[in-house]
Length: 363
Image 1 (cartoon, rainbow, N blue to C red):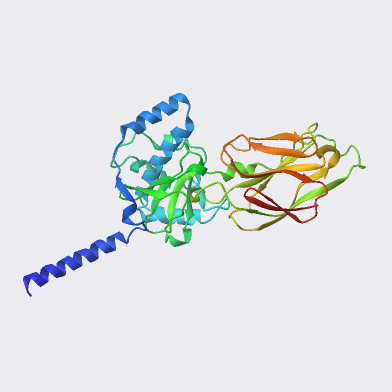
Image 2: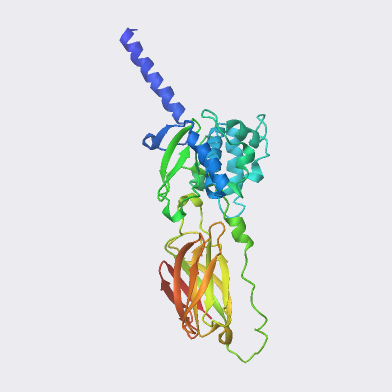
């Protein structure tokens, strides 16, 4: 065999081996890669400073960053992949996510508990000032797979990103993700990737689902039976924006109804857990409130919002007595739409369009 032919054959074989090894991980294109992860002393300084100032969003974001790196490295273990594929796939709250508390004590084959594997990986290759105990101070810490769950075989490592907490989710532009080889990538926060990406963050749906229709009514509805009354029904709803990027999974939509009688300040809030996608009509067919004009007034106003942690801090302002009322947002929640005046005598089944929401109402 000629020497030049042998060299060519070896080169082809080497290319084939390298090509196959890359296929072991479901990853994005190489042009997304940023660099090897190196130790950054400023992270420690920023973390200690944020704790001293009580800036927990900043502190928790750094915790999530280091958790994401450690998890990405741990996914080189197929047992960890299989566990997360199974538990995330259960969609315990309707989203592709699982609480860290649920999986941390699971054994990963003969390697010990999941929590220990993560702990051993913290700062590996770069040094770390954070322990797993520190990271577990993040409230409702979760692992999710918000995009392309079905494309992941649950055997090979995938990228792991973390949720920014110091920037409003409507202003996210770029997010950082890590692979099992401790390389960092920049992903578009607005456009979902066409490959699976795992995300660590704070579960929004636990607190959201604990909140039910506001029960703050005085006992005045039994006062008389002579006033006009009717249930206001939300027949259907469609939203054009959800306020979040793909990173946070499905939105958590709620609607606030408010009356125009300032004396009683009538308002109700209802969670709409089924409204998960934009530009799609959802049939709700549920009562928003019992409309007694003596106490609600002759008109109502509505606000549609997307829940973020520590949300539900909305307020109601009477713009014109018995004609206009405005629901205002004073929290981190994303405001999707607002309408100031719907009369008691509105046509049944009417479609109301305001901002980025279309809503069908009847009574």
